[in-house]
Length: 105
Image (tube, rainbow, N blue to C red):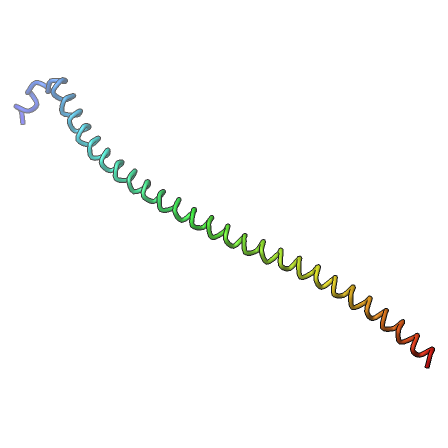
């Protein structure tokens, strides 16, 4: 124990080299972890972008179907209104024709 206490302290340059070696080894490991994380995130990003494109395509298709149905509903509404007007006209004409035949009879 006495020898360790009386031994000269380690030279600073050796200590710095050891610390930098340990830091370099740690940095390499950390760099590998970061590279793997980056690759994982890139892959997830690609998958999410693909899902987003698919969702947007599906949304566009559904919107096209909704627009088509809306157009058909509008056309049907217009047809119904035209038919109602025609029915009303024919009903009035029929009533007038009936009134004229009643008066003649």
